[in-house]
Amino acid sequence: MGRIIAIDYGRKRSGVAVTDPLQICANGLPTVRSCDLINFLKEYISKEPVDAIVVGEPRDLQGNLSESMRYITPFLNQIKKELPMIPVIMVDERFTSTIAHREMLAGGFKKKDREEKGRADEMAAVLILTSYLERRKD
Image 1 (spheres, rainbow, N blue to C red):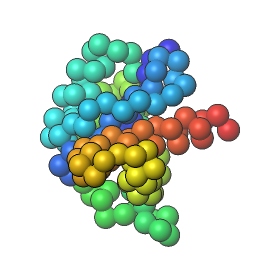
Image 2 (cartoon, one colour; image 1 turned 90 degrees about the vertical axis):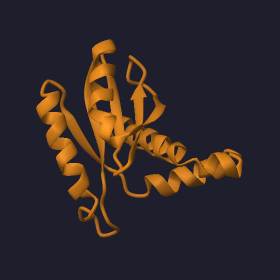
Image 3 (tube, rainbow, N blue to C red; image 1 turned 45 degrees about the vertical axis):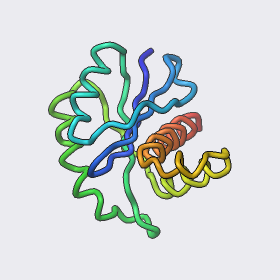
């Protein structure tokens, strides 16, 4: 069984999370510059088996795709071209960044740590992956 990777895609940097080999829990990986993300994925997949890539799908409060999709669509096309053997699954990412910030507050993160922009992206990716894993159980 391979791992599942989740991505909270952003214009400048992207949060990345991955499951354990049994696909039970999600753990954050270091934030990656979005321009380096495809190479990061290729390198990771060359070392670890990966069954799927989960990408956060930005939606507005009414459930419509948000403006951010115009940045994500080219990335999705590139994944499908560069890694055609790995399925890409879209998961609603509404509120993941807000929840990530709340979790950092609740977890007692110091202000300096909360302001580290990559930290929230990483946590958002973990939330996206956790949401996918929970939904898959149903």
